[in-house]
Length: 83
Image (cartoon, rainbow, N blue to C red; front, side, top):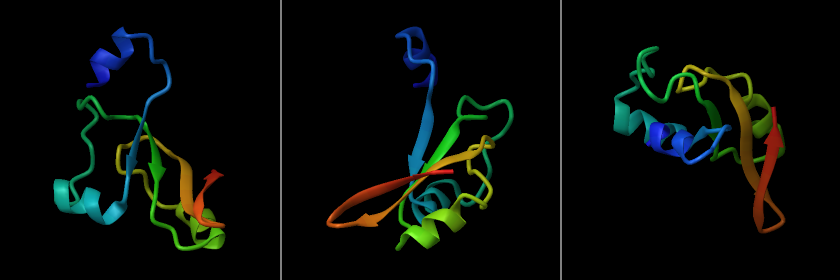
């Protein structure tokens, strides 16, 4: 997936996930440095408020990269917080 996107010209890639789902899929295993998802940036959804989204910026990235964006409910839509 990462290879194909890069071949198509994408130069900024990231992983969009809800931490409990990532945990369920991977068993909590962090992305290995040799894996294709390492060190993509993370976009974490599931924060319940702006304050929680800001706090989520401090959690470890599940891809080995860094948390760049967190998401929270805002006026009936998804608000994005840039870390």
